[in-house]
Length: 502
Image (tube, rainbow, N blue to C red):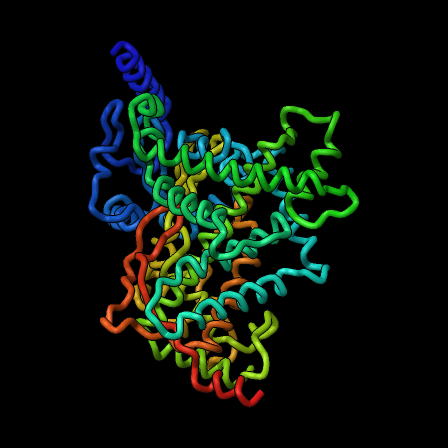
């Protein structure tokens, strides 16, 4: 029991030290807080975190603070303040808090998603960016890869012959294979055990991260039995085994003069850095695996989740689906399939995708940032080490920025004549912004456009025979997931007739 008393005493002393340091400075209004526990008793709510934080701004303002045990945290609910954090002072707030769960996921802060801001993070991010550039000027570019996966996806949906089904696995596989080509120059089949491992891993991560579990608030709590932590460790272990197998295969065929994917890029960097590695610029197999793991984590579940949200909203708003299909029929027809250059013509589809990303953001709370220097937000002092939570949900649903923000209105992203895409307000950044902006934003947008345009060119979407529509209330996590649902994909009559006459 002595270790508990020591931990409690240290937490109390840290809390008092922080309180003394605030004298003479202006800080954001803080929720009530107690020694050791901090504000935890006042953060208990039946609402999901992003909704609860949005409601709290009515009492505490657009920026306010609370204590997660010994950790001082600030919530930002307004675009202008978020812009200051992410862009104007992006380097001040570009780091990540160290937490038990993210350390397990990232091998103690390796990779790019959860690593500290600094030379090593910049090096790995540049290596990933250079691999994206690699795919722009080659025959097997991203557009071709996505279209190949769209072909397989549509074939799989057609095979259901209009029977009610849950499309989650199909969408996950399509998104995963795009990333698999990027990382390994290979792909998976639907019955491949590896895809099941990655899907289970993704589900575990989403359920366990972004929830401020007890071990992330009080690290010593991991000494006690913890079912969720055990599941996370087991899932990460299985993912690592899969990635280690991929790395071994890639090493066997690696040719430094023929770089074709992300693993090749990282292996080449490792060879080039051999003998001149410093603690700040370290390239090990574990760093490589964690970087690849981050790309999977950021690039698969996010895209497949948005596709599911789009399909769900189109079931709720069939008139929107019909407008998109009419646009596809008129601008493209059935003699060819959509390509990325069609984005300039399929404006209503593009505006619908933008509206989905607004009304149901991928991450309603961005992954926490951390102040890596003493700084400020607006008129308020922000000490080094402060956790910063950007409430994207609040920003995307701000009635002072958006007309009727709770309504699904794709037209808000079109001009009055419906001839051009517009941005009605700057209060919109579904992929984040600044130094930590989503590195694969352009790829995600390309996947969303091509997958949805291919599906809607060929299929009508119908609810199951029981008439049950998908719930539009999501499940909070590091990715805002839709509750599993079923629907029917029925080949459109006009598509079938066009194929018969071709």
